[in-house]
Image (cartoon, rainbow, N blue to C red; front, side):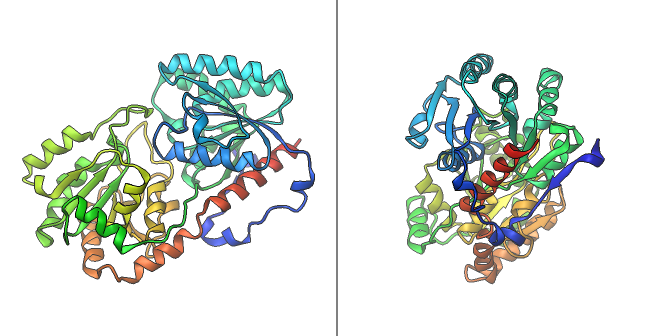
Length: 408
């Protein structure tokens, strides 16, 4: 029942500094944890980075086994036992996950953790066999993906979990509405790596891509329909260009072949649209980039644009790229949809715009451009990012799992 739900939504901007490890945790036996996820490197994306950090946090604190995608072993701590499974076809991956999880559950386990809702069935079966607690870290899309089989099997399985962790208040609210884990949901926002920004790094990016002193808008993420880039190019970029004729939208991201939902705003569509609107000179599509290049792009950019759309059957669970931008002192302008309000501190790390208001979106972008690179928001964005660190994330994760393990 909803009245029985416990919804812990502690926002990192207000209480991150109050979190500390319980002094009794280290004195207890190390928990035995099985993490099952398809979302790990070498696959790319925010969910993959987050699951890697989950594994790193748990490896320091528990006896951890990971069942993950082929190639993931080299990205995980050496002490972690890893079972690798090819990610394609998806059906084959899920069947092998169930088999591997069942076999591993023949040994004692304390917690079986799903890195997303996708692996819920293997997790629940392993938990039942081993007598462990079943827990899922949920991202939003794994609760609302529009597939009848998923709704018929996966969601009922998630409702039988012992607990759920959510990446944002919005994801937690969706989980509670759907009865996941009987409403026992805890919000643990993803983290970010704090960095030292460098003008030299940004200048190197600009020089290499022949950008010079042009105003740069940066978009980072997979090219899905949810990301909203075609609508931004059509409805906001022309207004920005009227005030800043040499503005350049730099897009970093791939075509999302491994996403749960298909592409709707890919490279070819963006190039065609820009040509139709005579904006080809204002668009630079770089495709996927390595971490060093992405770091340089954040340093080089003037505004991070995050025009995510509200799409049925799809959702932006959190908005990790907004936190990454803030860590580089780069303000974000975003539509206030999904879990993005957890990631953007309005007035400190950027602006939140009512969904679909492209005129206001363009105005706020121009306002940041006019303020220049010495604007106070660039420093307040960095301060805001300090509330989101992977160390805080790891502490919250371990404390939550320790509490779940002790619960009756």
